[in-house]
Image (cartoon, rainbow, N blue to C red):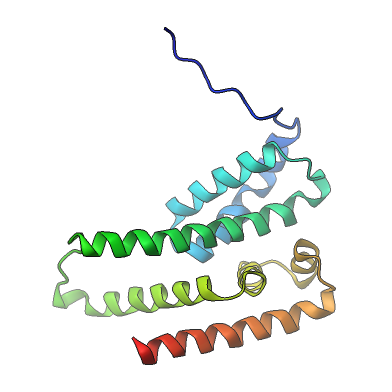
Length: 174
């Protein structure tokens, strides 16, 4: 019996290629900002574009939708990655650390703690923070999240404050 391709869950939109070409760098950048890994960000981008390809999101709203979807999907990967890392550590998957790379280890640990704190923030705050720090303008963040442009700054400042508190709370307890 010949193997066949699984049936699609609907037609792929005709405008996928131009939207992909225009938005791919931003989608990868948003995901990389959350995950800290270009390889993982590219996996997230693929997942996001597959979903977009079967969606009915208007092309004019694609960039905002894709940016938010990238942030959400990357946060989900981050959360599942933490669980995977705990399982790998329990199984002895950790590598030996050489004293020569102590500074690198400290930096990587700090990034890990910030990403873990980001994953614990309320979803809307985390997404607003990621989008703004990924280079989206206040207007683009507002459009992507359905906020008024005037409230983006407040939302981002609150998210930054919550992130700082979350990092500090876990730094003192860990």
